[in-house]
Image (cartoon, rainbow, N blue to C red):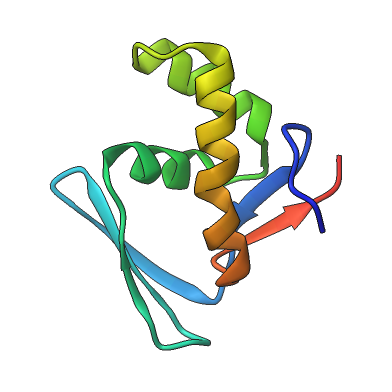
Length: 94
């Protein structure tokens, strides 16, 4: 499934995560792999705790960080791709 700004994402139930000083570390139960996230990806992760459109994630990130919309959108889409590939998030069409 292609991920777009209109896609709705939410955290998968097949993972365990914890916040360590503002950065998320998580483990895929299914894969047995560990992942460490920087502060921006950790914020995306926090926002995906409930179903949310990627465009809404960009709205939040733009309020919190000094970033242009086109840069934010591109980087948010790139950031969620590996999460979807590793089945750490669920992606739904709008």
